[in-house]
Every structure is written in structure tokens, then in C-alpha cells.
Length: 100
Image (cartoon, rainbow, N blue to C red):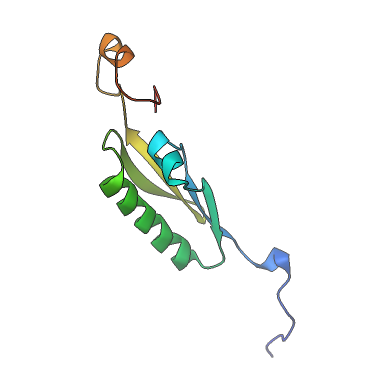
């Protein structure tokens, strides 16, 4: 017999899209660091759309990827200013967010 009770807040699993580090381009775009969805499929499609936006329209100084962690999607930075440069080169980088 199927239960007809309404779901409690505790019954609803939330799925988050998290941008691990907001670079200056993400801040300029006004992207939210955490977005919450009830449907995992919606969270996944949002994370994929954000990744595409970040890869195509940001300055190109960083590379990003998506990692699924439990019921959440984390957009992380693979590389950025100074990641592949020597420390001396990194210190004179034109990036406005050193280390990100």
C-alpha cells in the first residue's frame, strides 16, 4: 500500500552545484558559488551549462572541470595563473587574482 503523506523537508534530498573558487571572471559575471536543486538531473545540467559558460566566455587563464561528490557537482579549477610558471614569472603575472 502506497503512503499518501506529504514529504517532509528531511525526505527531500538536495543537490548542489558548487563553484569551488570564484575567480575574478566568475565574480564579474555575478555567479553564485552554491546553487541548490531538488532534482539531481537539473543540478547536473546546470553544472554542465556553467562549465561550458566558464570555459568559453571567461578570460581563458583558468581551466575548469566538474567532479561529482556524493549528491553534488563541484566545478573546480584545474589550472590558473602561475600554475605552470616559475615563481618569478607568477609574481609578475597580469592576473588580478594571484593564485587562482
